[in-house]
Picture 1 (cartoon, rainbow, N blue to C red):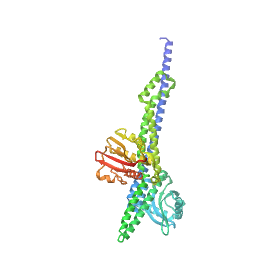
Picture 2: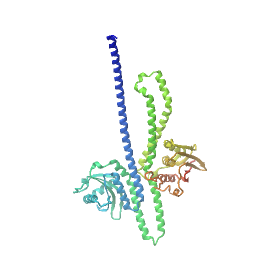
Picture 3: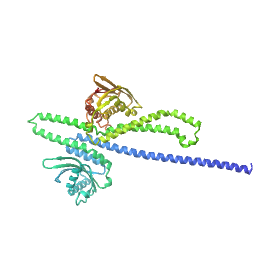
Picture 4: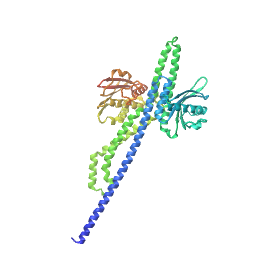
Length: 503
């Protein structure tokens, strides 16, 4: 072989080496870009998970507080429970309760301190020092005027205070007038450092205020009424019956107030939205893999590549992916709108009573509700529906969707190993009947009378608040609808809803 041949061979090898280096460099660049995308996705996932965890904590605080508040037998125990739960929820806040009059007199005072350890004794002394130096008239005036949560530096509301607290948040719970004075009940959150103040949690605490205020006013009324009954029991037996009727009316009124503020209903739409996003992730991945050659080097596309691309589109059923993606996005938007509605309702417990009823198609409401829970049933469950073409009633579409979704999800939970949900709608004279029947574990006979009672649940602790069916029952009452429950253990449960048809 001549020198020229060697040189030519050397140059050829050199060109091959250069191409391999360029290819490796390009592969390394793509790998680095892919790693960066994965890192960003992981960070976003952590942020999303953190937000979900925070919302779950807030949800558990509100529902736990709600359940415990109505069980407490006295006003003092209601306040003690609120202080304890608030301290755990706010983490670094030291809590106390005072009743402050318009003449700057503290009528009541409760600390979040059950033991008498040295540390808690010192904390009690700090509370007393702050209250002794508190500018009470300023605090009373501010809270009476604004009637909302207010944040202070401790120096701005005290004189000659030299304790450990630097900031305070004052939350007015209620205001009442006596014969000779007015009084405001206040929860004070005290902080050693202003960096410990969590604004998001303060907003959640603010949303619990109206519920606690109603509970306190109700408990105060109950205690006053009980005292009157004790004094008049020997002379007026009929008063006891009147009191019992009043209590029953208050229970119904309270149930109506609770209906729009139940946070656990958020879990249903959030669950199917997350499921939708998981499905969309798979769809996007299929389409991304299919169209990747177009994105990498559009200039190399030829007839053969186009045919191959068309074949791959058939393999992944591209028209179905596009159509199903549109349906998924539409149902997800509906679910998130439902979450938005539920969250906004937390601050106004009486909204359900103010909602006006209007002509709606019950069949359409059922279909929309089924669309929202389809992903929950698609693996181990089957849904059979037989609906009327037109079923006009007078009602609130959003509220009835809340009822139906609750019943559908309860049916799914009752069929843990799979089964069929049968939905049947039919007419009887001037009424429309809707049957929702599952093949689940059923309800024991002794529990049937309690299933619509607030806070009653047969689920394990932490899995249910016992409010779903109670809220649904309240909504159906507002629609002048009747509900009948037929159940047999290990065979299933049927909820039969009856509505008046609108002609």
